[in-house]
Image (cartoon, rainbow, N blue to C red; front, side):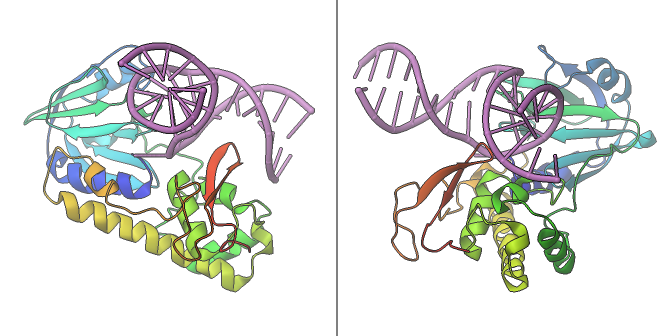
Length: 262
DNA sequence: CCGAAGACCTGCTGGC
DNA sequence: TGCCAGCAGGTCTTCG
């Protein structure tokens, strides 16, 4: 469930439960794809206190006492659960001084790792934090198809396949439009759509889970009404033209051929 | 620089 | 009803 709004919801939901907790022990389960270095995690996480839980783009950073960090990425199907029962998909289990923290992930594309220093990543500015002028300037300086650019985490961090399609729909931009060809005005529309759509998704996820510690954001996630994503053949909500599906950068891409002509 | 293709995985669904 | 290709919210590497 993991694009920026879902990760933000997880952090807001699970963060308050974790803050101040002490990690007593860690269990890592084979085949060690999610946690590829179980020894480091088992050696350095127990005994430390969780100071802070933060989000950067789609990454969750858990700040531990003594300068260590947990880096968590949910991949495609990862879930971070406070409390609850282990499942056949539980890959990492943290025993806390009060309660449990589970990382579940059927497809195992996610990652749970321990780092001594804060990990450096080839990551652009966070999509909710980037300033408009910077976003617009960098977009127009690149020559790349808009769908691929929005998905490029080194350009801006946090946008995934669903929100990329929705952002382009709301700003009237064709997924294959070249970023350098957008007018400044149009680029600002893309920025505005990005902030509005991600912000609404965060509000929706956050409001529906409030203080519910063992939720992961799913509840908020499914309340969101997509206008083009996975609506191939359905009439566009604006003009009625059937939504089209193409492949762009190996990702399923949905758009309205009439409303998105830029 | 760019884009395409394949790899990494399991699980659900849509069409026959 | 049952089966299987195709597809899935992400990223990484290799190759042309």
